[in-house]
Length: 182
Picture (spheres, one colour):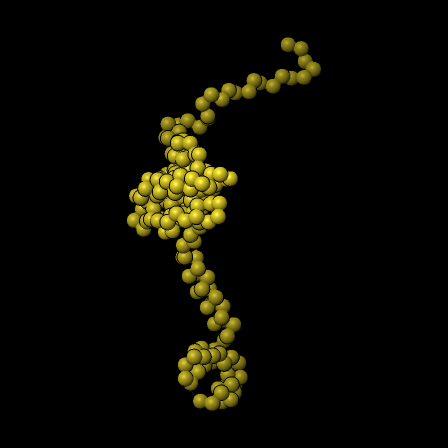
């Protein structure tokens, strides 16, 4: 029907004429309460956003002269990030003459990737960006769920055993009454 006729029908009913599909030929319009329609549409979109998974990029930084314990500590952090469903940007930062030996940085990043093969895929292989070398790892789809937190596990064990106080903590001595002699 012509737009003028549709508008007059909408005004008689106290409703609005809303264009539903503008790309169709001819454009599709509907007589309805536009406020209610747009409110419901916004609710559907926000509900869809709630179920989306937000992936963050966490960063782990290394230096060429990193010690074994420091490397293992940062590797465990990277593994925790990956198991949490986040991507990991691993960076080796060079200073001054360390740039001459960029193969050391490449070796660190390759070692990290090889130790995390069970939980990670190499999204971006090691590449030099100025004084830094960067590699991005993404979590595997079939990676195991994250392990329970150590503190939560200890609290559960303590609750099971009936202990609530921390070991080694002493009780405060009773307060002394002021002004009185003992």
